[in-house]
Length: 90
Image (cartoon, rainbow, N blue to C red; front, top):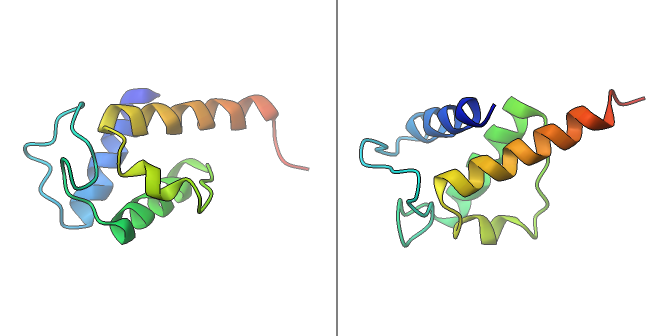
């Protein structure tokens, strides 16, 4: 699942017109690495929420710029696992 999520993040970034050709698993998403600004981080989060059925709070978004590609993908994978374990919504 992790690889699927990581690939989806890269695809989303490509759709957002970011060059991911030099993106590594340990590169930070924000200004210290790929250089996503706050609105781009929010857009990425929304795309991933839609793709995987997870949710991020507004308070989490600023900190996501400090995550690496692998850390962000792991966070999503954890939430997907938690959502699956909780079962279908009633």
